[in-house]
Structure formats: C-alpha cells, structure tokens
Amino acid sequence: MTIDMRLGDCLDVIATLPDACVDAIVTDPPYQQTSLEWDRWVDGWPGAVARILKPGGSMWVFGTLRMFLDRRDEFADWRLAQDIIWEKHNGSSMRTDRFRRVHEQAAQFYRGEWSAVYKGRVVTMDARKRTVTRTLSPAHLGKTGASTFESEEGGPRIMRSVIYARSQHGAAIHKAQKPEAIIEPLIVNCCPPGGVVLDPFGGSGTTAIVAARLGRSAISIEKNPDHFRAAQERLRGDLLSSSIDAGVWT
Ligand SMILES: C[S@@+](CC[C@H](N)C(=O)[O-])C[C@H]1O[C@@H](n2cnc3c(N)ncnc32)[C@H](O)[C@@H]1O
Image 1: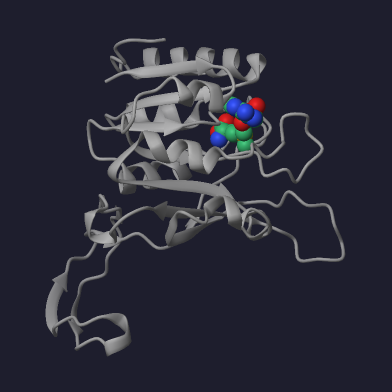
Image 2: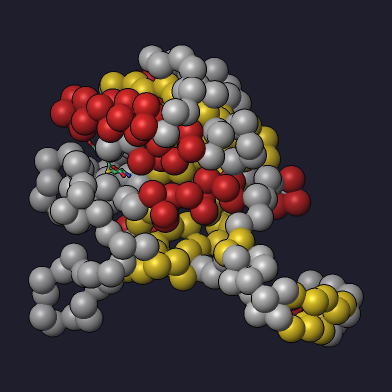
C-alpha cells in the first residue's frame, strides 16, 4: 500500500501520471461558492482525471446541486450513476430567507458500460429479522425475477443513500474537512481492496487517510502549501497511531 502526497496544481500533477493508473477517484473539489482564496473552480479537471482512470473505474464528487448545474458541461463526457446525501449535524448557512442547510451531496460518475464498473457492496449492520419477497420488477426498472430472502436481526443491509455524519467543526484542521465517516462508504463502493484511489483536491488528506485504513493506496494532490503540510502531519500521526504500514511516501 502506498500513500503518495503531491504538492502542486492537480492539472500539472495529473499530466505527469501515466494513463489508467488509478482505480477510482473520490474528491471534494472547490465549489466556488465561498470567498475563501482557494475556493475557485479548476477548469477542465473532470476531463483531465478521465485519462488516468482505469476502465471500470468511477468517480465520486462532492458538491451542491447548484455546483453540478453550473458545471454540467464539465461532466458532459461522464455518466451519472447515483448520488448520496451527506446529512450534517449542523448547518453552515447563516441565511434567514432559505431553509437551514444541513446537507451536501456527492455524485458518482462513470464512463463506458455500467456493467463493467466496479461496485463494492456497502452495508450497515442493522437489518431487522424478516422475510423479504420481491415480485417481478416493472419493465421500466429492468427485468428481475421474483425472489425471497431472509434477513437476520443485526445483519447486513445495503447502506441508505442519506448518510448522517457529524461535521468536523472544532476538530478540523481544514475549513472544508470532510468527516472520515462520509468518505469511507464511497471508497468501499468504488475502489477494490488493494486498489489506488485519487483525490486531486486532497485538502487535509481525509481521502488518503481513509484509503490507507481500508487497505487501499492513495494519490492525494494539494496546491496550497499550508493545507499540504497540515495533511502530511495528520497522515503521519494517524498512520503511526493506527500502526498502518503505508509503504512509500512521496
Ligand atoms: C474542498 S477542499 C478539500 C477538503 C478535503 N476533502 C478534506 O477533507 O480536507 C478543496 C481543496 O482543493 C485545493 N485546491 C484548489 N485548487 C487546487 C488545484 N488547482 N490543485 C490542487 N488542489 C487545489 C484547496 O486548497 C483545498 O484544500
């Protein structure tokens, strides 16, 4: 397992990487929705990462509905697979003329055929004991046969698409730091064990840390030297305390 931390502009770094060298992408790009100095959309990044993604790979991207609509042309060559909602424990907006915003979205994109895309099963261990009988699906959902299965009390259940995770306020070293609990299911879903996950907007290194804990390699790129150094420190501390052998560091 390798954790490869790169300081630099993601477009420059990606240009140095070989074709088809990563299994998956999990990233939280600048949305360009705040006045923070680093929060500027990077033109062309969704196209640039496509070259280094292996066939069968996919990409999870955090964002807001506004961001995805504003930037839809950037994702024109990608297909949308699904989206999840990250439900936060508190909101980030001070506006009084709209709902109190307590969520963000992440969307999964892929290229080629969906049947070829890696799909890691993400479960929570909270099933209820019951017998589920599935009838034939309606034609518009695709044909599936009738089936019956027994679920066990406390057994596995496919994870719901609305995922609650406490925000990092207070404990964060980065203003936009994502909780590890929201990154973990996305990595499990899109990157096979032992595979390589890329985060072109690494920030405080959350994707790399979670990848290492899950037995995946990571390439994490960050342009801002302060964020980069903070991420290195965080990763070093985390890997030492969890005794993970992260192999080579760049
Ligand atoms: C939303 S934050 C990512 C936060 C991260 N998910 C975390 O948990 O800490 C986006 C990051 O992208 C970085 N960034 C902005 N433009 C970049 C570029 N062109 N190349 C690489 N990183 C960039 C910013 O400095 C910022 O740290």
